[in-house]
Image (cartoon, rainbow, N blue to C red; front, side):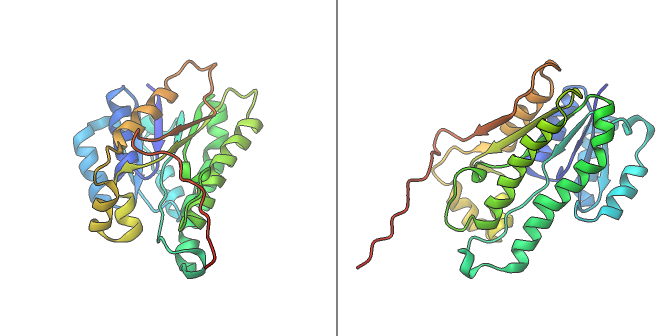
Length: 247
């Protein structure tokens, strides 16, 4: 039985991925800050799910949680770097520097840190890394600034890792979703109204849609590598060029 470690498993894509992988016969370590949500998921999924409560930005807490893994969960075959967030929608000149730093610390530094931590074991087991990026890595939009920059980093890191681990048997994939109805916009804006407005009249993707794609990538034959998958709901397309006109 293979084991996956999924960061950010307390909601959205991560929570859906935990369910999808357990249903498919995997063991899953689900990480997150909200102990109550992880406990509820453990009660639902049973012995195949291990809750690991820590903030991905806290390396000491992460290491303690990994050191305390039960024997059955110690051999990790797949790292799903899902934990991440967007904060604020202001243009760069009106944005909060604290929010920028929080996004960088979470989406970039924490992802790099846990990847570096687990990479030797993943190489030893000829495992896989699936990083959740975003279409924002490719298509800029007003107010995306640092969030989009962090996701571009995730995409480029995935390609760089793939180059470095060539020949080890380790597979690396960047999953790049567009509009998906999760807690993403609620966290970003702090407003349920704003979230409802964004998804209103649209048939957005769900966390489950993306989780099934992650599972598909993870269960492909070991000689196949998916470099990147860009996903959007049919109702979403690429933004047009913005042109500011004087007068």
